[in-house]
Image (cartoon, rainbow, N blue to C red; front, side, top):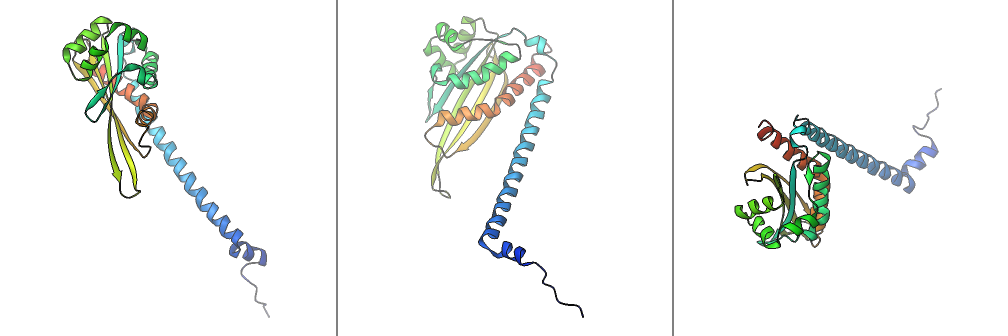
Length: 225
């Protein structure tokens, strides 16, 4: 006669139905979700890196080597542009350092301030073409990059928090004022007050992509000349 046997042993049953077993199952669920999130982020980063490398593969590094380029960063908030360059040193450095790696000759903020008056920089951010030409001539620059931070604040009713949408538009133009390339990156944050910090995080995350896009467009439009 075959005796009935329980489907699970006592220790296993205790593990499954005790509070400790429930906690173990919950931990497993959290761990699986974290691993899936990490994989998603890794895949996204890999795709972005591949995109950057593809854009940088354009064969015109010799064309841009030692070209002089000026980087200016400003912020538009509530229709008013703030363009005091000392306020955006970290944002400036994130872009400037990547341009140097490509072989371009960039200017420090001290050099820019010494040669270009603040009033002229303000006019440049108001899309004054004469100011752009004057600024490039003062530094004998062949190209200029303008990075403009724009923000829009709103209330998110779902989470009942202030939300700030931060966008950055980068424009590469020649010394003659002609636009060569434009690139945009954007993000939203609930850290409403620190707009400059959100913008810096955004640049650090996407600076490689921005510079690669400007470079690729330069190669396509200017490199063959």
